[in-house]
Length: 254
Image 1 (cartoon, rainbow, N blue to C red):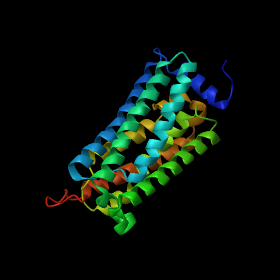
Image 2: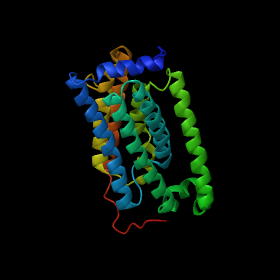
Image 3: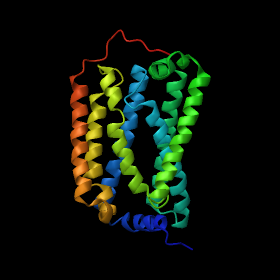
Image 4: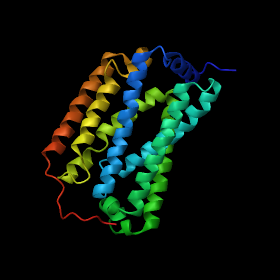
């Protein structure tokens, strides 16, 4: 029997809104998920090409904690709602994201450890044990943040509330990396363009957040924040576009 906790009410709303007849919402959701996958396609492509990507290591840990936990909780909820396509599909989508994040974490540690960690850990970046210790403690902390925030938001059904925060983090989180690079080494204009569209489909009235929970997101404050993040994403796009291409003699530290 279903209960009426805030978390279950969130799930019920999602199952009521995400139906075949609600084409605008489904199209908006599809765009949001495609944008999310494109961000990681760029991250992996740049990591393979340049030895590092645009997303900092700590963000991979943060997204792994978020995506794996919500994959589990949403998947569990799907069973209570007759395997509703949106809940089941979202659970699978988060699981796929988790695999991509694990790949990025593994590649950073296995192949690009000095390049990734030397500025943070100095000579300790040569030590696999030290890097693994940092990784495990940071990942544990990220799980604590995700679970605590979800509890404060009403429970694991708050996926829409949490996911727009992860989109905001994708815009702001890489800023220091972008500034430090000074060239397009591990960066791409295309990634920044995708982030601009990420802001649009997160904060605009045609985004799935406003369309599915208008009483939560259809507010002036939400749109004002969206304007700030849109300007922020364009600023980072202009920054990367102004950088020279990656130096041809660049070598990868391992």
